[in-house]
Length: 416
Ligand SMILES: Nc1ncnc2c1ncn2[C@@H]1O[C@H](COP(=O)(O)OP(=O)(O)O)[C@@H](O)[C@H]1O
Ligand SMILES: [Mg+2]
Image 1 (cartoon, protein in one colour):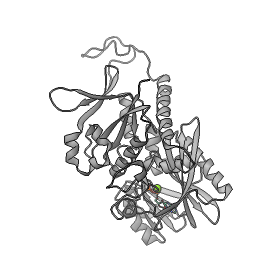
Image 2: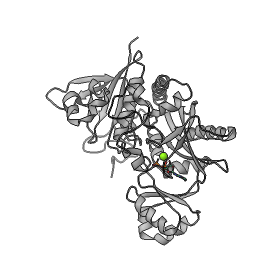
Image 3: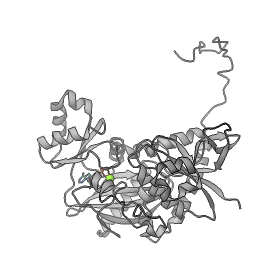
């Protein structure tokens, strides 16, 4: 049987660019080489697309000049019934490679947030992972919370506002926030890296925290803090029809919450257990916890009472379903360990390292998870295309470059 050509797309204009490289290389290494021909497609921070075998090795990313030399700058396009990677520059627009299905392994803004999926859907190629909608909602805490609360999924009490509203009428915004009880936590709405997140236990700190968060996004969230905090993560694999659940991991943050320093900078290396995947030196492995970050320690399975565990699993399915997610998402929970209250904090629609460790924790082979992700992507593509998206219509038939010609009721103006 001929192998399926899978284009693994990673990188992009995101602060989580480097994390995505690690996630993608881990996945490429673990994908079933009997079933797939893997075509790496790397998007630079400038937005240039590159392909080539060279991009399967973590060493290649230590020096960006090498990428220019050893990889080929391409564009992905639909060409005569095929999805091709065509050389971007040079005399001949040579076809360098072709793929059957795309597999985005990207994190953060400009990629994971539905933007890349939108592009792929415009080109018309099937892809693995969340669709545009699940990507968008998964990246915006305000949208996410609106849907969670509408679906009666347990979340902490919160308020949100725009930076402009705060600047114009601070008193009014603070009045709204007074409905909440201290301690509070203030976040920019765009999720991803704990950047701009701080806590407040009085109004002065609150104002400082809001000013800090406003540097990162125009939508600001203020929410009540969960006390006696225990954080747990679980991955969900599937689509809206059926879901599989991973093991639950307990995440121990060093500080009250993970800072950007903890997650990305730390001692200068990204830690974890990827060595066994053959990811070579330079990065100490794959990325765990947080959105993409590294907790100082984690415990698997999480130490939870049976009823709390059941609640986490039930809510995780509910979240995945409410967002119409697809692929393999990680859902993060905040638990009040004394009151045994469970709150969903966020969904990561394409989690760091694709949360391989949560699957392995349950004895599920990560290679199988990746297979499922490709299969779900192809199946959902067929389903999407099976729905009616256009009507045969001759509405444009009557138009000439001068305007109208006998199209009833439209008066010949396409736009005003
Ligand atoms: N309501 C809350 N109560 C207590 N801790 C919280 C709360 N919200 C967030 N945190 C802490 O802050 C961390 C980062 O917040 P999160 O919403 O996950 O942002 P990000 O999208 O940047 O990961 C969480 O992992 C958790 O440790
Ligand atoms: Mg988080």
